[in-house]
Image: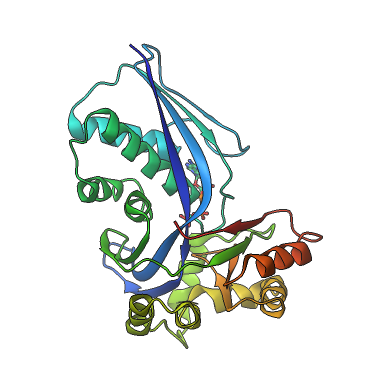
Length: 286
Ligand code: ATP
């Protein structure tokens, strides 16, 4: 019998991001405080279709075969628990912008892992599910867990942190995208002048003080990308002028976010940006 599963896939923002060095396997060790936000894709899964696997995505340019991270997640999950789902069809309604540093593909993969695990009666704990996610992509473990967390290694080491204090995010995705691989190459060649203070960020989260959390956001990729795309300075200056407590790029870009304590100011910021940008979002931490 065919069953349909529904799951929300939430975008992430990097409140902090530090690159600690290159590992012998060529990947980089990271340290990042990540936060899921209320910008979401909707994932629907028909399971037991009795037909070959299919995937549909509402956004053009996203692969609709086994290269899609949601498809990969379904394969990895079924293999791990030794089940044959007898045909899977996945439909993704996409709202998370692509190439934004918001973990859109990883969020979809994590949603598939959670939905299938629920369908099969939760044979894997959330931490086991996150560990499985590391086989799909480095942001998948965090997206599986969600909330506020310290993420280390290649993304596989997770530690829950106190929830982000209540606030409003405005996220703006400019037209350009950044090649993540090239960005890592670049960061290997430059001295990193400033790194996030993770101790201070943890203390700020523990105290629930939004201004101190905002003061301590820092992404080592931000100055590297901003140097080549001065447009990011324009977006950040609009954020700053209209009440943002602080602002920066997320992940490897190109989306930038502002942290505000008022929805009214967030609405004004959106208004100021909408003439030049089509991808602007207001979000809350989730
Ligand atoms: P990250 O913060 O993880 O670097 P990103 O915003 O840079 O995320 P994604 O939106 O996850 O990037 O997409 C990156 C690439 O992954 C896309 O070019 C796309 O081809 C591929 N991809 C595979 N599966 C998906 C999916 N379900 N949704 C979006 N992109 C996907």
